[in-house]
Every structure is written in C-alpha cells, then in structure tokens.
Image (cartoon, rainbow, N blue to C red; front, side, top):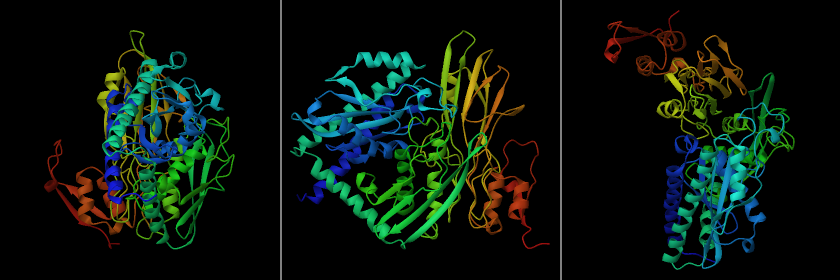
Length: 569
C-alpha cells in the first residue's frame, strides 16, 4: 500500500529521537565503564518481522549490523503468539548475534492494543561472562564463558530469577553484568513507550508500512550509488599478526555488478585453533559497514541498506568459523575488514581511498587483588591512528572502525588500584606522507601499592604496520611490553607490584609522497610534537630548528624556523 511521503519523513525523524532516548537511558543507567564510558553498545528499532528500521547515533558496527541480522533468530524462536507485554528476550550466542560470548543482545517486543507492532533491542559488551578472561587463549568456545540461548529474561514484566542467579554464579562481576542487563531492559522500555505514544498520536495501528518505505528509500539510495561505480572485479589482501607464530591472511574479491556488490572472502586463512575466529554474522557486519562508509555514508542505516550487499566466506575459514571454534577476540581480525575492502575499492573510487589504519581496537583487561584483599577487574579500551586520506591527514587515536571511546584515566584510577603514569600522543607513529597518518598513543600503567595483578593484552599490529598509499610511509607498529621486555599478546600475564606496563598503540599509514607535504604543515607537526625534528628532516626534507629556551615547558611556534632541504644533494 502507498504511504504518505511526508508522514514517512516525520516518523523517520521521530524514530531517530526515540532511539537517542533509548541509548541515553541505557548509558545513564549502566553499571560498567564498558558501556557507560566506552559506549561498547548498539541500540536499534525493528518492525514486527525483525527488520531493522533504524539505529541510534552511537554504537559499533560489529554490534549494530550483527544485531540487524541476528534479530531474525529472535523472531523465529518466539513467534508473536508466544509473547506478551512485558516479555524481554536475550542471547549471547556468537553465531546468532555479535560473534562473541561477552556481547549480550536484549530484545523487547512492543505491543499496541494487544498486537505486536515492533521490537527494540540493544547489544552490549558485558564486563565479564565467566570462562577465561577475554583473550585468544581458548581452544574452543566452551572455555570462553557462559553461553545463553535465546530465552526470556523477563516474563510479563517479572524477572526470570533462576536465569539471573545462573548468570550471577558464573561471572566475576555480578553487579556490573546484571546491572548492565537491567540498563538494557530500561533502554528498550523507554524506546517502546515512546513508540507507542507516537503511533497513538498519528492514529496508526502498525509501523510496518512506514518502516517498509524507510527501508526501501535506503535501499534505492545505496543502489543508485552502486550503479555509478564501474562494473568490475577488484581484489586486495592483508596479513595480520594472528596468534603466536600463526599469521592470518585476509583476502577479498569485490564484484560490482550494476546496482549490487558481492564480497567474497575466499582465500582467507582457515579458522584458527585460537580465539581470533570470526563468525559470518560479524564478517557481514563490518563488510557491509565498509561498503556503505566508502560508497554512500549519508544513506540512513537500516535493513534496506544491506540488501544490495552480498557477503560470502568459505565455511571453516577464519571469517566464517564453525562451532565450537573459539571466538572471544574475533575483533582482532574483524576490525581489519574495512581497510581490506577500502583498498580493494580504490580503483573503483579514485580519490576516495585511504591508507590502512591501526584497525583492531586494543582491549586490555586488568585483574587482581588490592592490598586489602578486594578483587578488581577492569576492561580498558584504547585506539590507534586512522590512515591518511587523499585530501586530509588521518585522525589521531580515533576508534575506527569500532567507534568506541578510550577509557578515561580518571575512570581507570577510580575503579581499580592502578596508576596511569603517562598518556600522550605517540610522536612519529603516524606514517609520513603528503597527508600524514593519524598518531597512536603511549600509556604506561602501574600498580598502586602491593597488589596482585595480571593483564590480558588483546592487541594487534605489533608485527605488521598499517601500510601507506601512493608512496606514503607505513605507520609505526604497536608495542605491548614491560620496561624490562616484551609481553605476549592475546594472553593473560601475571605481573609483580613493581611492574610498569607500556601500551604503545600503532599509527595509521601515510598518503602520498612525504616530500609533497606543505612545509608549513611539517613545521606545525614538529611544534605540536606529532613528528620529531629528525623525522621532519629525514622523511619530509624540512630542517626545523628550535631557537627558544631549551628549558621551556611551553614552546611557541615563533620559536621555530623551517628550511627546505628538498632538491639538495
């Protein structure tokens, strides 16, 4: 049936406001810093069939896009006749949702006059879900924590007390984990209440017709953008650190065919014996995100924008692992997919490419016992630099492609007996180029007092740097180490009270010949300590000299001079 286009626009905008209410309620009532500070979450609204109509502004692609396809499992498991007002469902099955045991999706059916008309859902990273702490050490998913099938967390508004007790008994952070689940329930309730008021305001019995038109508009817009690309087949490949001596190769073949695009990851490494495997749902999530970001980022994000994008990966490969493969650190592979795909599309999108970024989010988990015998556990997120673009420098310490925020120092030191001694931008970590890669950051973590503690470093790009484009230089690799030597990555390590852990994040690659960079930009980078005088001279051909007080803590731009060495023998 036809719908009023003005009504579609009005309700579409109102839904965005409702989704903001949902996310704000979730974040403001969350217990963990993972959700409250880093926004490791996603919120969305779905029609009665489980098709995603829209998402909140915040959130990570790995959650929102995986939830968009994962909702179909909820709808299949609980048809409308099995639900009633006040019911709330949840699951953390990696193969049905976001690919990791720690990510819990909570879904709430919305009823209007006794009829199911929509769903609100959110997906959040739980601070703990039992099993091993998040790492790549497990050899099967059963070691990684409590796996919850799709089931009712609330029945007609009453909490499933047995399920809550089961979760509490299996996690190290019961108050935070259960508190975040209640926050997800609250966010969904806020969204559902506002949606019911909206439908009553416009005297509507269903949202499905409006939702269908919203999704169709996104589909048409993305198809129009794809149709402008030259038909053809494009490919790229990159290698990640993997686990120990097991490197992981990622390959993609992109086929543009009219107004559709096919992404085939055949040729990628087989699934790993360790927990860096990616489920197909998560592969689709970051692959579809990369396509939309590269080709038409302004298209509203919903189920319609997925329809022209087709993603395949061989079963049993690292990008389509089969149970019971371990998957806890799947983001250390999945976050490389946007760089892989944007590189493949470079020929089809001239002038719109970018160098590789730090890519994988760095997640360190600190656990131990303080001097009074109290246990603590803290998840800390940090981000490296984004690759340079064809007309702009890369962004420093920005969560691409994850979208997550770094954990503030004040939160770290409040929630655990730890001291972050240093937190600075990492000089010279961005790849040199006409456009410089974004910088990583340097942080050092120590203990406060005589504590027993350990760290899990879920990190990557310690061995393989973010590559540059068109003569741009590679970014710096990361470093995860004690002052006395390197630490193993993706594994838990016990520490002594006197240890200091260096967490130095990688930078993004550069774009273009460094000798083509504006000398004034080179001078500004030296003044800001983004690059060193030595790098300015050796990589950019610019001699920068400081003439001010050598003891000055604040050095002004007028205290520097720059002389070009380019063209000299």
